[in-house]
Structure formats: structure tokens, C-alpha cells
Length: 503
Image 1 (cartoon, rainbow, N blue to C red):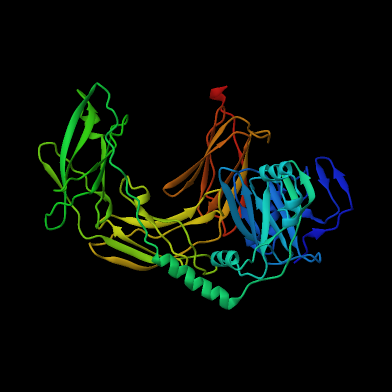
Image 2: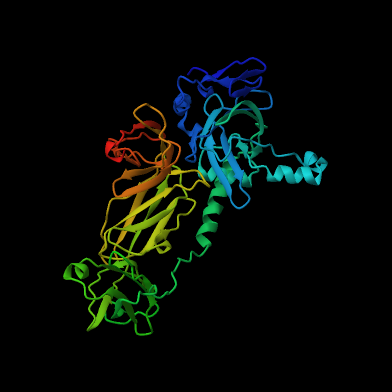
């Protein structure tokens, strides 16, 4: 592969750029004739793991990692952190064969260096406070460690992290390139890693996981012109025994209010639900009311149940023995992955954190409270900007019988992809009017409010995706299907046509 680094003169000042005497790759330099070329920079790196698509902003932070002899450190684990006082940000990536990396959408393009113990002691209280309050990124490296989630955890135990000294090589308003220098001594020990892995997983298994439970809350205050309807309900086992302490979530949406409430059953498994609807309306109004029930029964399942409520009788909800699902979550290299998973039912429900699935450090997971007879999927994804974004993954839809277990489910999470782009008018200029962007994928959608004609979506799978754009004074635009390769960043330009009817 052609080396990405090119030599620069000792000090160079270009319009909008300041550069030092360190080498800066051609792909990082700004070319006014190719203003979006930076979004193809990842293609020149020898590994996709050297590119991190972090946030939706258009800043770019890149660099090269070297040892204290000035030699590039290839295929070395990197961690980038950012302290925002209220919350912290942490993401991981890996240098390519030339020691290069690039971060799209970092919290900041500024870097700060962690002072040594001696430097810290020499600082005045004012200097320490100023350094602590500076909002900037910090880098640390783990030389010699394999690239896996478990290895990063082991690096903390084995003191494998090496603080990096960042030296600015080039800077523009929207981007910066640094030369990172660190001690390349490795503390990685294969046997120590295996011992750590076993203990780490064993400790996790010993911890009792307490599933989240909602709390009872009454229906929202009804308007005065609404009529009250009361439904009596009993939650029972398959042999007719009432289930005490079950939480029943009821929704009756009439297009205006949701009649949402959470009620707990008494010692006989009974409770009553309130519904407030407008009076004196036609049949269409009452037929269009959307009702659904969700039950969280201790020792049984949690999820949606059939909702055919009648006011003049006791409504019985039969809860049968729950089903279960278990399996393993892996990254694209086959390493165990601690990943956010949950059960997603196809039918309407009010499940929240009750259906989150704990995943252990060895990637294994198990959820024992599937509502039998209800179609569901296991799905996951990490979109949070506070950590490394991960691509979504989901199983096919399943329906399980009472007591049935779907075992050996294998979820392999691909490398996360991203879409960045611009919204332009017929003259090619950025549309500065606020645009509503929706990223469409199967039954999911993400929303982005675009204020400056630029946007970004991270933590994406292969798709297909479509982008729908709506802006005042322009016709709605829908892209064709966008298929993404693992780890790809796709840059798109969306041309909007003026809507003469709005002129």
C-alpha cells in the first residue's frame, strides 16, 4: 500500500490552515475544489478499524501514532476520551499499517496532554484548574494487545494503557491532525489475558441481575367533556389461579389522548382500568380507538397480551408458562461482544426496560420471560455518542409456545457504517433553511433536523436505507435505496428542487 504520509516543510501557513514540521497525509489537506474529499479519507487506510464514525458533526480529528523513537506504531489499539464534566465520552479504534487513524465527528478537534506526576506537582492550583476545565480529547494506546472488547478491559487490569502526547501538525476550523507519541512497551501476557477472561466472566455470572419493573401510575387527568369507562380485569395462570403483583399497562388512544396507566393486581390477581372517551360521537370514532395491554407478571412473561375488553363482565387474561431465548453476541472478528440487546415484540406494547437482555462479557445472553404466542425478535445496537457506535443487528421473527426455548441464537454484529451528506439547492449551494431528514430502514426511522445543509448518521448496518428530505420552499425528496458495506462511510449529495407553489 502507498504510504499515506507525505513530507511537509518545517513551518507552513496556508489560508485557513496552520501546519507544523510534522508530516501530514495528502488525504487530510483541504482542497477548495474538492470540499468533501475528507469523507473519502478512510478508503486510503489499510484497515476499517482505523476509522471511527462517532457523532453527526462535521469535524474531523486524525493523526499518526509513533513510538518514542519516531517510528509509526501499526495496528495498535487506541482509546479516545472526552470529559464534558457532566458526562464522559469514550470510544475505541485501531491504527492502520502506517499508524494512521481518522475520527469523524469527534466531540472536539482540540487535544490535551495528560501531565506527568512531576508536571502536575509543579503546576499552580490555577493551572491545574485550567487544565481540568479545558474541553479537549485525550488519547491513550494499548501496544501489543489484540483488538477486542475483552482485550481493552484486560488492558486496564494489566496497566497496558499508555498516555499519548499529542503534537499538533495541522489545523483548520473543522479539522486537526496530530502526531501522537507514546511508550510502545507492551504488558500483554497471553496467559494473564486468559486468566483475566475467566475471572471476569465468572464474576459477572455471580452478580444477580434484577430486571427493571415499572411503577403503578394512574391515567392522565381526563378532560371534563369525557365519559369514564371502567374495565374489570383478572390476570390468572393457565389453571385459573390469580396472579398477585402483576403490572398491567393499558393504552386507549383515540387520536387525542392515550389513556395511559399502569395498575398492579391485588392478591386475587384483579384490578380495574379506566378509560375516558368523548361522548356523543359516531361509530367511526369508537371503532378507531386503539387499545392494547401489556402485562409484567412476576415469575411469568412480560409483553403484550390480547386486548378484548368488555365493561359488563370480568375480563380474564390467562398467562401461561413463559418461553425463553438464549445465545451469543459476537463482533465481526468472532470475539465475544458485550452489547445492548432487547426483545422487540411485533404487536403493540408498552414494554420499556423490562425486556432488556443482559449480555455477559463472554457474549452469552438469556432471556427467560418471553410472552408465549407473541411474535418477537431479538435486536440490538449502540447509537450513543458517549461510546463507540455499533451497527444494529436483529434475528428473524419467532413465535414460541409456552415453556419453549429458542437456544443457540448467534448474533454477529458487523462493522458500523455511516452516512454523511449535504442538502443543496438547484445552484449547488447548501440549503440553510431547516430541513427535516428521515433515515428510513424497514420498520425503523431516525430523524435529523438539518440547520446548515449538512447531516450525518452513524451506527448503521448494510441497509438498504433511504433518505427523505423535507424543507420549506422545496419539493420533498426521497433517495433511492442505499446499500452500505461493513465499515463504509457513504457521502451523499441531496439536490432539492424549488417548489413554485410555495413561492
